[in-house]
Length: 190
Image 1 (tube, helix red, strand yellow):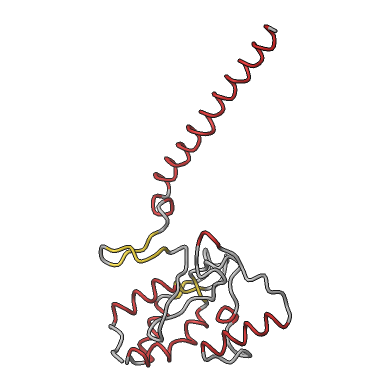
Image 2: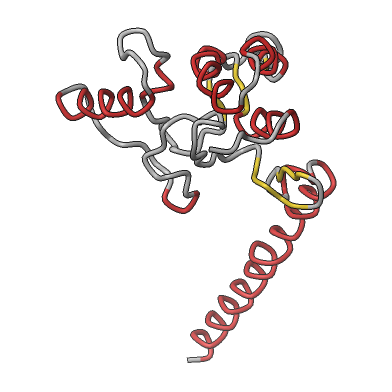
């Protein structure tokens, strides 16, 4: 019986030590490193306009109205707690969804950039391709009463190249582009 009690106490001590080590100290150390090495990323890469937080550079958001650049379609409406793709495989359902998105965006499905018509795997992608941004220039310029050349230049200013010249794809952060657009002009009434 003494041996069972000794083993139980040893197991209890091990559990307490490991709980403190991996349940308290390790998470605190990771949090501390995150605060020092990447404070912005650890805080969610928040984007502010003036004193107000308007979004995150890591998560896309819905933009309503012709006066804004729209992000990539999202199967989860950009909800971080339910992120995921549509799970539509090649077939009639995907074709119908692509046709619906093309009609809603006023795009020709045979020439539209793929990211204009298909959702990302996570449903959270904050970026679009420069081609999709350019495809929206005329609509946004008309809705805001701006010169198309000025809006196209704004897209070029906010287009980012591949990371380190070879990682990923050229991209445009929709939130940053729309904030620059808002600074450029207020949407026209009507």
